[in-house]
Image 1 (cartoon, helix red, strand yellow):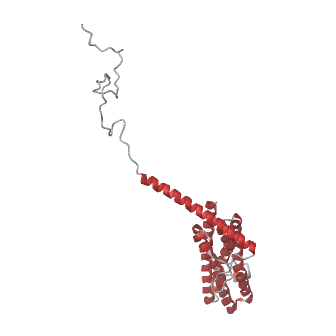
Image 2 (cartoon, helix red, strand yellow; image 1 turned 120 degrees about the vertical axis):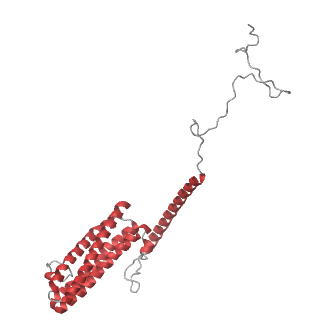
Image 3 (cartoon, helix red, strand yellow; image 1 turned 90 degrees about the vertical axis):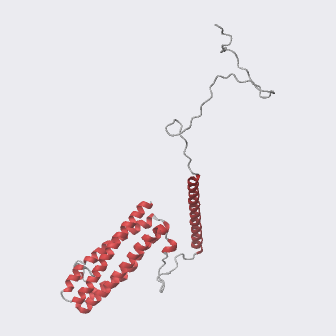
Length: 269
């Protein structure tokens, strides 16, 4: 057989000079051309899914915005701290009296001094303080009616003492520490608030019951005192029932404020 035209596997393939003139000889490469196959589902390499860059850009913009907002907040805090220190060194009082507006006796500015996320809780605590003031004031009125109806002058003086001591002490012992704790994030002020606010809740529950311990309990408008005086004087009994309802509402509100403040304190820390 004639093997002259059989290809020799050891022959070197003819190199093609791309710079030579004329037609280049055909390549002796025996590699078959790759067939183009469409890529689709079911193939080994499926088509890639393009992710829009707008979502990534939006996330980066939000991160930058949050970082800028946090930096600005820290800068404002440092500025406020610097001003407070400067004013304190100068001997100028920081807490100017502005409440109540018609006769300012205390400093109170929740909207500008308390953080936004804690303002609702601070307003609830403020309502609780106003509630005990209302309860003690109405207690004086009801006991005065009872005194006029022959209840004795001692219960009247006790009601006056409750009001004169309860209103300022409740502000100094638990409301003001909570206000400062919310403003400065002080754990010591929070502890002070919890200690005396528990006493406040206990007093409200005691006043709502009014057990016959001190002058037969008539110095407080509780349920037991209301039942006692209702049989003698209906009008006095009505006043005492209203006072009982006020002390009950104050007790419920105080328990709610105590729970919310404790949850805020644990979550914040």
